[in-house]
Amino acid sequence: MKTTRSRLLAGGLGALIVTMLFACAVNGVGVDSTVGVGYVGGYYEPYGYDYGGWGGSYRVGPSRCCEHRDDRHDEHRDDHHDNGHADRGRGGHAPAYRPAPAGRSAPSIPGRSRER
Amino acid sequence: MIRVLRLRHALPSCLISVLFFGSGLSISRAADFELPALNAPPSAEHHMGKMVWADLVTPDLAAAEKFYGGLFGWTFHSIRAGSSDYAVVMLDGRPIAGLMEKVTRAAEHHQSAWLTFMAVGDVDGVKRVAVAHGAKVLADSRNYPMRGRQCVLSDPQGAVFAILASSSGDSPDYLPVSGEWIWSSMHAKDAGADAAFYQELFGYDVFELPSDDGLEHLILSTDNYARASVNSFAPGSSRRHPHWLNFVRVGNTTEMTAKVIALGGHVVVEPRVDRHGGMLAVVTDPAGAPFGLMEWSDSDTKAEPK
Image 1 (cartoon, rainbow over the protein chains, first blue to last red):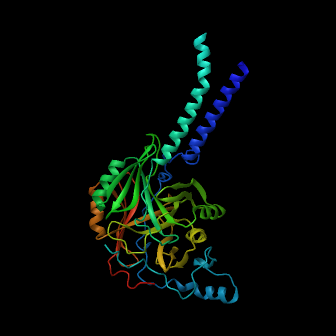
Image 2 (image 1 turned 120 degrees about the vertical axis):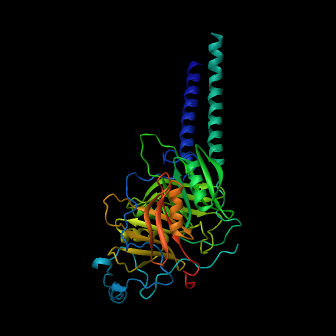
Image 3 (image 1 turned 135 degrees about the horizontal axis):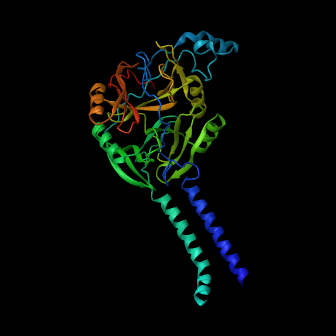
């Protein structure tokens, strides 16, 4: 009788622990302790870094439609497409990305207005 | 003695009750957080790699609402996010972002920031590709009933971003109105490597643009629209951390920058003319979260690329 009760107690406790662990996993606690329970969203970034200090010619925005790309490497790009030679990016190194086909201009953002 | 025996009899039942209560609590916690659909009515469009949402994490939600409401005229709809407070940002009746309060300990230093969400069709598929190319999963994939499925990652250089498969589709490609997100720029140690990473995820076309600063500036596009830029770190500081920076469309950058200061924010990059001929600036909110302001006149986009 006593053994049966002990087993029941142990089983119950085990189930409780499993349930609590499951609840933590469902709520994302086990994956990301910086996010509040119930939502996978906001995330603090590391502290103490610079976001400014841009030089005067540091440009990050989109171009107007349709700005010509930097074609200094198009010759190499053509080599790549035509002859299978390695493509070259800035500084003469092969870029890690696949450049858009030569001759295509960089597009701009959408210009169509939303109907209100 | 009898009491002890009764207690022993009751203990298993109590444990079972606690077990069910715990399960119920867990389910209710997950269910009571209902993000609004991105699009109502739903859109049939899908735009891989388009920035479709942003979440601010901040230590003071009320202060953030006061700042952004005063700056852009945003309104807020509060919902409970489990242990955190969350406010959906509304503009012209549409949800465009979220503000999430996450209180930190006094001794802890965290950088309040906007988290950028990119549209995908298959969160888990894109997550697998990202991890295979060096990304880390910061918050695993999860479904939200009206919103869809989302996941938070850091790219191989450490920039944090999120992917979202919206269950209501992606918003059509319109020119954003004032107060709406208009642009995202990525700042990385190695712009080319990061562009390659995001190209694997979203299938971007990558364009290198001419620059006067000798640094690499790349445009990422899908559907023949520019979606974001990737830029090598600006020189002048060794304290750089890879990050995404999102820009809100404004009518007058200089005036809005002054308004930022009046509302308790700070200017990080003074207003200056950018590539499209309009002004942009980088500012922070009172908690230090950086974001950009960008002018874009209706005539800036000369012709539809489609």
